[in-house]
Length: 130
Image (cartoon, rainbow, N blue to C red; front, side):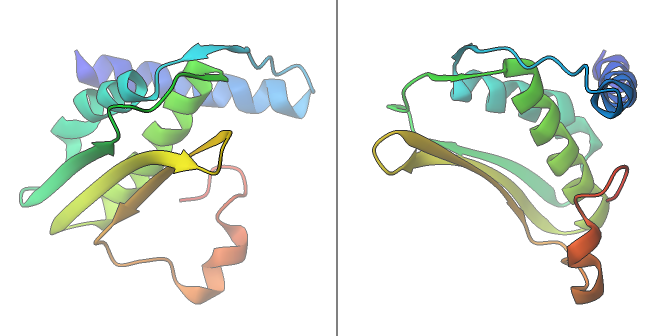
């Protein structure tokens, strides 16, 4: 079930890339429960981790709902955690979410993996980069 869901996410990523290139990408403005999004990502990707790697969700219970695009946030977190899973062979991957100032929420993905080589940092936000 999770494998099929991950494949659907990959297909959506490719379609979104084409839509973005053609400036047709639609971003929704809806009420988003960050706890639910993080829980969905953890459930979907927990099965792809290497033995000895733990996926941790650290989301404050009192976090308010935000306005955003649930699917896009899930897509971004899925890509980040998926990349972390490829390069983390021991330790953990953590998704954390906490208030950031009065009106914002910070969502972070961190891991105990090998890190990003210094010469690759400027290219990681390019299309289809890991």
